[in-house]
Length: 394
Ligand code: DNO
Image 1 (cartoon, protein in one colour):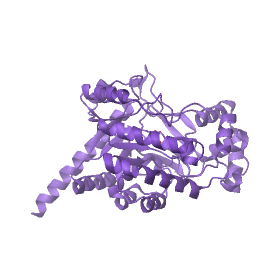
Image 2 (tube, rainbow, N blue to C red):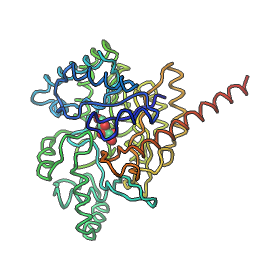
Image 3 (cartoon, rainbow, N blue to C red):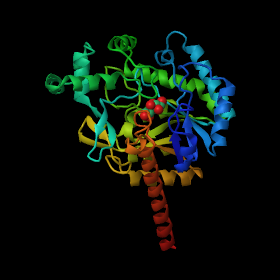
Image 4 (cartoon, rainbow, N blue to C red):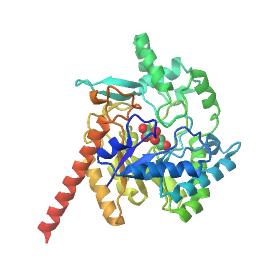
């Protein structure tokens, strides 16, 4: 496994030097000031690759090259944006960036309802509660047709929860759901969000998926030419939110994409936190089934109190993803390929060690440092176990 780390560029509170000190070899970054659809100047790409190299690491994964909403809807200027995308892929490949993590989720990248869950030891984590999302949709967004996504029991419970919620709690939910989390462009307002949602009215899941396959098949010649692997990020959460169609929430969705896009360069980012938000998803099984299409990994864990209600775990090892079993699958796949796969510890708790700096939600230094160390320890332990077992056999 190659130790990856998401770096938000020169404005990141965490420096490349600190990242290297964490044991990282592979930096995962992008140009966060650029809008989806923009052409990235070659010299910017070169400068970034050089800065990472100077710091003693490699820029091997770009997360993300955002896909313009026109491409997702196949409206407006989508052809030009696809051409721009291809151009960016070619430029990235020139500087050795051969893995692209991106998503095709309409409007919203990822969502949480609480960004400040304080754990008993004083550290802070993120949480999601589908009843709070449902209440937000009913009372803030006032979204027509939400009965299609939430059954009567869920709606009744959401209503009760909202009635009981203090002004502070309501603000917390609204703020969290409208916030531009890393990956999204700007913070939204309820009106702005309503407008963006309206642009997707009438576009169902099946059609959105077809648009994804069309996009991927259109860029496939460039993937073959450059050797770039496209690693789609699963939906976060992998169930309905705001009435938006979902694109990649389950093994069935990955299966359909793989079937529609025969190139092996078309693959996924195995994000255990996003997939694991739906308890029906089993990351280990998913890894086994699509092993040769897993181009990048985000590892972390979740603790559910019930389906649809969870928080990010205290530890990357423990929660609803069986991390040792998954690590074993990753190591087996690396052996088959004769090549290591980049894994980045995805999110981490906010610890006191970071109290004097502003980190992006989920992207602390201390929390991710622990996560990475745990995962590297797990890897070393499994490798040793395999070696011992191998020797015992001979
Ligand atoms: C959240 C991240 C996502 C991810 C994008 C990739 O923490 O995993 O924002 O970067 O979905 O396009």
